[in-house]
Length: 540
Ligand SMILES: Nc1ncnc2c1ncn2[C@@H]1O[C@H](COP(=O)(O)OP(=O)(O)OP(=O)(O)O)[C@@H](O)[C@H]1O
Ligand SMILES: [Mg+2]
Image 1 (cartoon, protein in one colour):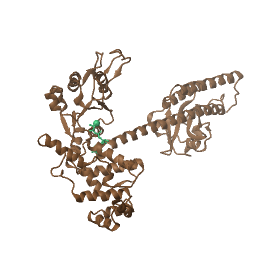
Image 2 (tube, rainbow, N blue to C red):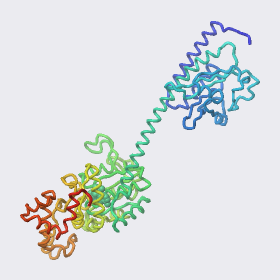
Image 3 (cartoon, rainbow, N blue to C red):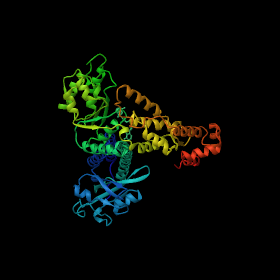
Image 4 (cartoon, helix red, strand yellow):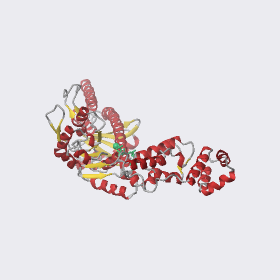
């Protein structure tokens, strides 16, 4: 090879070209976060400014443990897919392994050159040089930048290596940044997935407690209605779990990724309720300073839970009927018809049939709503569920309050025979209060803080008698007699034990009887065992 030194003029031109190349490269990297697109742009600049051909950018995939071509110019997709190298394999693998540039002045004469992509035809027919520089990020080699260059005496390979090393370091920083952003993005997605999962498990039927026949029928109904978009009407007294079931239906349905939107028709004044449901355009009424979406719109693709539907004013009932029929409405003050895909779940504790008779509820709306009615029975009609619900709430509030409160069999019996006018909510509140307030670990019947059933039952008997035959179903027949003397004695003994933390000598003193007399009464009322275990820990 004959030496031909470049002239000063040629050297100056070369410097200008290098600077322009670097300027273009940094401009591309600053323009977007689209990695592939940026890298392709860089290879194009290297090609058009510096005459470098067949540029490839390879990144190391640490999961697959291989160096693979991410972008390449002048190669077909098949050629690109062949470009995979182990660390240390061939020239590219060596650059990756050692983190230093390598130059092959004539690839046709180089046995180490793998030409795995076979994209060059017969490499031996022309003198082609090959340069590969490591791409580094944070001191670590993460890939390789390589180019081919036709043999040209006027430019030394060292100059090319210098420019390519700068370009590779810019690429390294970008890839690093890109990966950080990706990781953060992945983290956020993961978090969103866990939250969604949490919501699902919270409202999946398994978290609804109850094994009674009535509850099993409800689980069945949830399964069936969840699959369709049919309107559901949940009916039941306060605290029977209407909202819980509504959520379970939503989170078990194909719309579970969509929103679950709730509105309580009884909680809002008329005008507000209307604009909450349907939304309003800017200026629709005084105070409507901006356009606002209503709950129907917000629930698009998901479910809308209309609680206390019996309290919906008549004129809103008409509008609502249209939404049920056409799935379309207009915002207040608006003319554009808005279409929505919403599953309606309504709930009420009211007697809708008599509301219809009184002209307070539209019959046509009732029929539209009552497509799938799910009645939720009051707790007193499924007493078998009380023990398991009690267990459930004890575990919940013990965990929340870091306590280990347990309940005696007798206290549980008392819970089972209580009538729970406030249903599951009342039961839940009672247990929460008990767990927080109780100074002892074992709850006795008198710790329950229930309104005494005796008083309640007397009241019922009297009012029932006054009304000429009680219509209330909450009292089971035959239970509203005066407490027996035996029961009165039992209660007093328990009371005394409770007040003296179960210390029998002191309880006897309080009752003004001897310890022996107390021991006799403990046996007689079979309190001995429960109190014995109470003293020795929560084993009951
Ligand atoms: N079967 C059940 N298993 C577990 N928890 C329940 C069950 N039923 C109700 N609960 C709980 O009882 C409380 C009251 O339930 P919810 O709010 O769903 O009742 P509701 O029928 O909507 O009452 P209201 O008519 O007063 O609004 C909630 O804390 C709920 O989690
Ligand atoms: Mg409710």
